[in-house]
Image 1 (cartoon, rainbow, N blue to C red):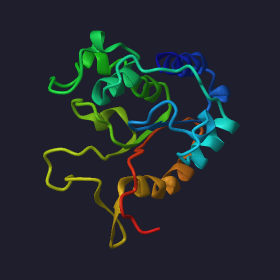
Image 2: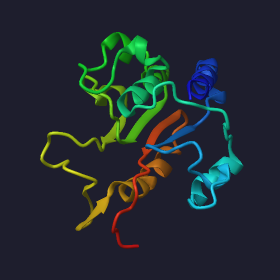
Image 3: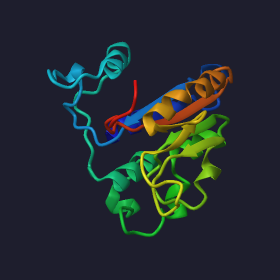
Length: 198
């Protein structure tokens, strides 16, 4: 995983200042998913047709890994490019320090002209996280009464599972594609769909 993040960060930073060459980037991170929980990885039981298609048409890193396979610490590492021992953030710790939030690649890209969006579970305690994104909708569960589980967002009058809400956000993504300097950090939760109606 660190190599993947470093690659994208280096690629993005190398293009800063070259307006015509700035790529549009969509970063999809699935939650709590083993390396082999993909059809493209050879799994015969789990069906992941959309991710398999992305892997076939894009880049599939077979040897990527997480240095800290813990939810909060891993997300902090992905955002900052730092090991947990450096950023020192995980569960039951104070918010990620500003010296590290200033290193987050969404902030660096926003500071260099990208339109940055975040939809999904941030999973990292950051002081005013919305300041790092042009638009955001954080699906983190926590002490707020309106975020008690995976069913609290609504599409019309229907309360839906969070991944359904993320899919519904595709309209926003397509609108954002029209912008020249687009960077979207999209976090998709891979939690099972429970008893949602198809």
